[in-house]
Image 1 (tube, rainbow, N blue to C red):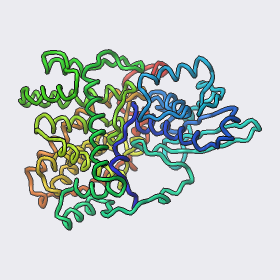
Image 2 (cartoon, one colour; image 1 turned 180 degrees about the vertical axis):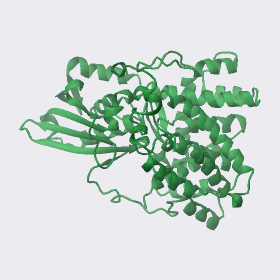
Image 3 (cartoon, rainbow, N blue to C red; image 1 turned 45 degrees about the horizontal axis):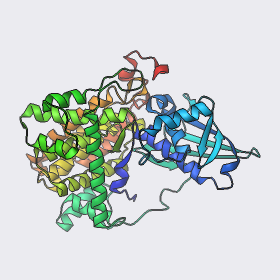
Length: 469
């Protein structure tokens, strides 16, 4: 059984896409790191071949930029955001890419090849790296970006480095059984599993960092105006909404911001507006190559921060409750990854917004005092009403309809949690495991045009010049 950590589900990185930006970025870095110290100085050419969905929506998602940054050996978690443009411009102007201090002639137009009509058999998101050495020997690797920033190399044994968790979980049934046997909450089971990798103190510190990155991302989005890059001329809206809600400028720090919102108006309209505002803010940052947390993907990165913000500001949650919120959310996400997919290229938007909404719903239900059964029921309700949602990004950009879908996913999560808390789980006729299976079957049945190809749905209804995106 695959062991998935909280920090596999929540990863700090750069927008706009976990599968099309972060995954190829990490794969490129792994490829160049895999070359020996003797091979790197001998590289005369690097070629990157993009297949399937990585080709079809690669430019809109910044895949070409991502692979160059990966070949340079940078890390999406730590690279200063302001350096992204300058590093890419430096490659373009000098025709040289620096890989671990070794210069290699490189032209994005020549050396990054988009195979729009070819898809590799294992997964729609395939990328092949080829390094040609000075004796014409070629070193080639094929990687797949399988959703949520997860990557796998062709031929690797995925079970080779598995750990044994004290509470193995593949399904919601497994999770509930552990909760019953231990008479404890979902978050407590997750914490005990996490201690396989880290100490309790380190888990707490790392989860706090995830929450901090999420909220700082939302704060930046709520204070940044202008138009998003890519050619669609989508205007940022979160900052305007935040200003209307606050009646003044946004406070300088996240702490001040949260305290002001906590002490402000808590009527239904204000609460709903803030939830939508935070979701929009995060995904506007994501669309602009900002620093985000994959939750469980970049395209759905705004749902969980928006619901976490709601939990903090309108339910008065403390630091420990927020930590538990993220632990529970991550476990629900891992159940979907194991039983279905979190890749829009495989499952459509139900695999992104649907999963993130289910994660947030379960976390909120438990945070508000719900039982493990009620938390799992909240996840089921949230996903049930995302089944069949297509992935149809206009121009291959994570903007239309993706940004607004995060706000809708957050609202559904809160509604699902509230509904679950008002019912007896024994009365439920649909289990979370049944919904996971249904989601996967729906993904398999879904026409490929509606799986992150920009070849169906809204993507073909809105005229756009792809050469500008």
